[in-house]
Image (cartoon, rainbow, N blue to C red; front, top):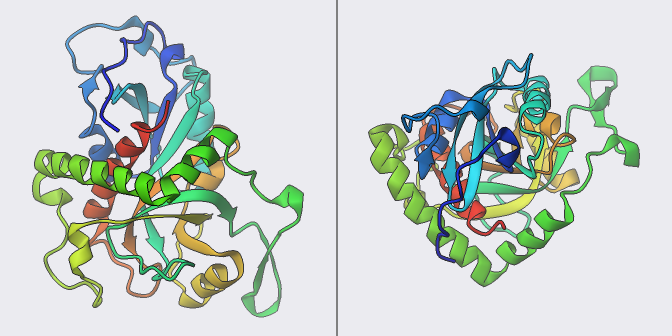
Length: 295
C-alpha cells in the first residue's frame, strides 16, 4: 500500500477521526516526529483548536497519511489517567472513530505460536485483559474476575477485519515494510534518542533489533507495574497474553481502541529503561503504518 494524499484541513474539531493516546513524553515525541503536517505550528490561526470548556487535556494536531490526527498527552500512566483523557478528548473531538494507544510495554519472551518476541518488536492488541480486576485471596493470591460482564468487549468489527488482513503473510509483510520506512524517518528526526541500545541488555540484544517484527495478540492492562515472572507466567499461560501495559483498560470503553506498543522489557526483575526510546520509535512507526491501511 502506498501513502495517500494528505486530508483536507479540518474546519472544526469534529473533522478529527483518529486519536493517538500517549502516557509518556518520549512516546508522544516519537508520534509527533512522524506527523506529515503539524497544524499547531503551521503559522496559521485555527479557531477549531479551542478545546471544549473544562477539557484539561493537552493536544497536538496534524496529519498522518490520509488522516487528521489528534495526539493526546495523558497526565500520567495508569487506567484512571487513560479513562479521564479519553473522556475529555471525546468532549472536544466527538467524532473520533479510532483511538490508538501508542507507546512502550513489557512482553512475554515468546508468543503463543512459538515466535520469540525481541526487544524493539511491536505488539498490536487483538483484545485487552484487565488483569488487576480481581479478587484477592490468602497469601496475596489474585484471581481475575472472568464473568462475561467483567471482561472488556472485543474490538470493533472493522478493527477485527483489518487485523485478520494484517495477520496474514502478505498483510504482515506490507505493514512491516512500511514500519521500517517510518522508523528510518523518526530515527533521523530524533537522533540517538530513538536508536536501539548498542550494549547488551540482560542478554537479550539480538540482530532482530535492526528489523522489528510485529506480534498480534492479547494485551494485559492494569495499574500495577508488571515485574513478577510468576504473575507474568500465569497470565501468559492462562490467558494467552503476550504483552503488559497500563492505560488501555481505561480507554477501551470510550473509543474503538487498539493498542500498538513497542517492547521495552520483559516485565520481570530485569526491567529497565534502556530500550524505551527505541521501543517508542518502533511503536510510533507501526502506528503510522497501520493508519495507511485504515480507511
